[in-house]
Structure formats: C-alpha cells, structure tokens
Image: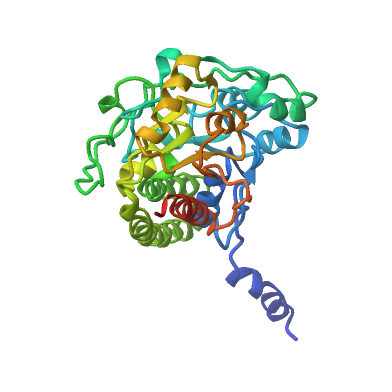
Amino acid sequence: MNRSLAFLAFAAPALVTPVLADVPRVAVDIVPTAALTARVMEGLGTPSLVVPPMASPHGYALRPSEAAALEQADVVIRIGPALAPWFEEATAALAPEATGLVLLDAPGTVLRALGEGHDHGDDDHGHEGEDDHGEDHAEHEDHGQDHGEDHAHAHDDHAHEEHAHPDHADGDHAHETAGAVEGPIDSHAWLDPRNGAVWMSAIAETLAAADPQNAATYRANAEAGAAELRALEEDLIAILAPLRDRPYLTLHDAYGYLEDRTGLDSAGSIRLSDAADAGPSHLSELRARLEVDGIACLFTEPQLDDRVARRLLEGTDIPLATLDPVGQEGDVGPGGYSSILRRMADSMAACLAP
C-alpha cells in the first residue's frame, strides 16, 4: 500500500470521531438538588451528593469523603444560604474556583417568606439543643467542626427577575421575586414543582456554559424534565386538593410551597424552623386546639426528633405520620425529585383522608 494512503487509512478514524470533552464534576448539597441535576445530566454523568439523605441540611459537619467531593468539583449547585449557610462557607473554603449556582437566586424562582400565613408561635421559640439534634450531632461529631444551626435567618438580598404565574393555587402566599418577600425567605422552595422546572433550566445553562460540547443535551433534558414536572403538578393537585378542609399540624414550618401550589392550608407548626424549639405557651395553645380545631394529623420528619410531637398527642387519637421533604430514600437519580413529592403527597393523603 502506498505509504501516504496507509497513513490516511490509519488517521481516518481520528478525523471523523470527535474528541469529547470531560463532563464537569458536579457537587450538590441535598438529595432534591441531586435529583434535579441528575435529570439534566442524564446520559452524560451524575452529580456527587455532599449532604447524606438522613442528615438535616441546616446544620452538618462534613465527613472527609464529602469534603473531597466538594473540593474536586468543577461546578457546585446548592439551594443557597437561606437553607445552609455552613455549606456556603464550606464551598468558599474547599471549592473557591468552582462555578457556583445558588438555586434560590435563579430567575423565575417562586419565593415565600418564612412562616408566612402559618401559626407557629415564633414569639415563644427558643433555640433547641441536644433534645432534637442530639442523635444527628452524635453521629457526626467526629467528622469536623460543627458549623452551627443558626440557619433560620435567610439571606434576603437575592435578585430575581419577575415572572408571572397567575394560576397559583393560593396566590396570596407565593411571590416571584425576593423583593416581594418581607423578612427571611422560606428555603424549602424545592417543594414547589414549578421551582423544580425553573431550576432544571438554570442547571442546564450553568452546565452548558461549563461544557459547551454537551449544551444541547443538557437543555433537552431540562426541557423534557420540565414537561414531567408539569404532569407531576397536576397529579399532586388531584391527590391533595380534595383534602383542603382537613386541618393538620407539622413539626416545623417547611411545607408552605407545596401547600400554596396544591391549595392545602396547615393549621400551624410546632416550630418555625428545625433550629427553634417550641416554647411551653405555644405547646399549651396547640394542645388546646387539637380537638377544637379538629386536627386530623400531625406530620413529623425522619431527619428530626419527634419526641415533642409525640408528647403533644398523648391521650388523643390523632395519628402521627411522616413527611420526608429531603428524601431519606436517597432518590438521587433522574426520577428522584418526582418520587420525593409523590411520596409526600401519598403520605398526606393517607393520613388526612376521612
């Protein structure tokens, strides 16, 4: 064979096969963020989860392997300082050069104020200690410095573009911009599926900028994921809307976004946040209201101690049920976000059904 022809035959595969760039290493804070990111990255890679499913994201000390995942990340995606100020500090220290995305800052995010429209007795709250977080802290006390739990104060200096959503189930509570929210932001914004769709788009654009070669895939995945979440919203409303007249209590005020979207209305919470203990006068008030208000259920969370809730219900027939807003099942795959919200809706329906 002619030497030049032999060279061309050898080189031809390299000429027609693109050299794919490495997919960015992505670290995320909590399971819902991981699931949304996994949907956008589907077919290309998977994100690394930093905060394990059974830990409260509000206060946590990283294990060495978790710190390493953050340190090695090219992109860090998280809810924001309103949820976990310690995570912002860890990111600044361990991944200062990484591209960052704070989801609460994403344009179009629906925001609500912490405790808005709910009775949580916040004038009566102190700060809780070992009673409610002892088990979690004991598990992690050897893994580094405790970053503290003073997380109820959200950063309210986020800038957002305004997007109108006139068909909120309860438009009096949900707002489209940080400027429309008075006081600290309720950080549990992932419990509104519309925010999930907005965030997938923001994640796709962030990853497209970091990995232009795969930009079309990220954007296509986000678009398909948004369509899935529109169907999810319809399902959630179908499940929960018939239960709007069934009053219930929650362990802490974390479900306003889901309630606003589906039309539910909590009768109150034991605590404003999972870092604020309920004062005795508020507990006495809730106890007096249990039967008068016809409370149908009290919801706790697997990440938090439920002893106060159990004491509150002593001597009553009111059932205690569990809601898992963080995703203790570890639903970090592409369908995990929908699974978290569907399980929550099913748990609410099972406990609230007459």
